[in-house]
Image (cartoon, rainbow, N blue to C red; front, side):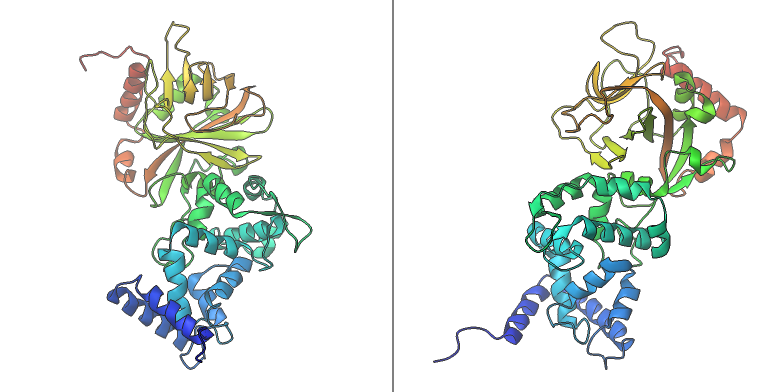
Length: 425
């Protein structure tokens, strides 16, 4: 009788045939060309891509890079390196597979020790690799620095499983999926490691921050790591330029000054608050801050936390109560100030028109918890950044910067906000 079980070689060949069907002939030819080029640099007589060449090409640093190489080379055993069959099977599963297949691959990838348990130690290694790869920070600098943003990312993880192989708690696949929802930049990064490195890989791009040269970075709430985190909530993958529009320590804790600064041409803004308890959080407003007697905005708006935990909370579609900007209304039903989500007097995030107090409640608009430790808070620092695509507005802004026209536009915007501009204009 013949052997009814397929040999490992035939099983691997079958998986390769199935995986190849995920690509067009042109795509397969391109992948074959890439493999041939990298294998030629690997001193393997063209049979495989060596570990050093693989890691250099894909540019993934630290333990995560080693784990990626291990998983991609898994099909052939990895003794020589990554074979062409390894590359096709991995890219088909990781890049073209079902949601469950992709999530399972990334989940295994983050288990950098390969012991079958995704622990806090594994996540620390993953985030260290992110820091090295995305922000070009050397490993010894990462380990020796006070890295608050990545501490906040780590604090968002829930580890609910008792793993037999290790003494510490581990993450289930469900835990990991929930973490990826809260940290979409991390999910984008982990989901695009095998994309060509010159293709502007999602999760690898960091917004460019522009602020006056005389401002110390210690004064700013936003840094490039937090900007990377917030940027993960945007639908587009282009590099954005973020310009500091308002800072309470520089411009004074004034609602009118805030409005004058943020309504001068930048439609998309990121509002960040640090309260007196030390928590940092805010919201992304996809529409301009304009005087309304009711909610407005679109489904691109979201809330976020930065410290002590980092999370993003997107709209659920439960309602359209997205953005709020009320100025000089006398009705108690229309609270003057700016906010996001929830209901009047019970917002997901709200700053009063005096900028001296605010509140944050559980919010069905974004399925967000209170962002502050207590529902009512007092802001210590308020910061707002305008967002634009790289270079899109630079020339236009330079033409009017510092001119009478710019000052006139700012004054007109301010008058419109408070409802005093000539309606016939």
